[in-house]
Length: 275
Image (cartoon, rainbow, N blue to C red; front, top):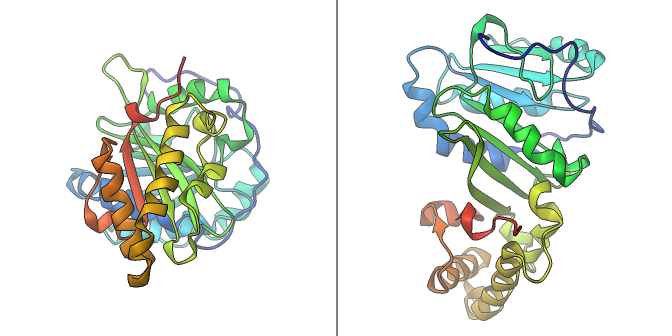
């Protein structure tokens, strides 16, 4: 890619590599909804990167399958620092448009193509908080115009997760747009359980005085206040919870259809870490 910095080895650290089928279905569903129109309107086959897919490429295969439903010629590239993982994954690269390569936050892509979306789930969780912004900066510098980095974490079965939608600002710096929280509503006892799976940039900020802690507190309070809706099911109780949050002034994004899925997206400014 023209103007890209040359590196002698991938940037980043090898992850534990653990994964499970369907672990990332919730974030994939959000990516298809949010970026499906961008993928569909691309004048040439769009590139999407799955960064740090782990010891088995199952979630990369699933990502390709889900995106191909929107754009059949999508090019999905799975990147891993571990060469052995890439070699093993290459045996699963049967569908056209699915490849695997060695790489990290520098996002090395052949052919000078820039990715429209980079998905990095359960990658930065093992890093220190101060390493997040440099990693974001490297990735967004590689994005195509209008593209995004989707970075976050989830539990082992994909029933609970959160992610940040990061864009490239006019000055080239990473500019978070929103935080999305996602729950499997049928098993939800208390919304703040998602605090265990906040992105690295926020997980240590769940303390009094921080905005994300205020969100967790208001979520639990609104959920408790909506107990009267429980007789109609967890979904109706969650919809009432979201309505309560909006009434309290939280900048909730998205539509009722997204909330029914157990998603809550809020503008980044409402949860951004304090200085």
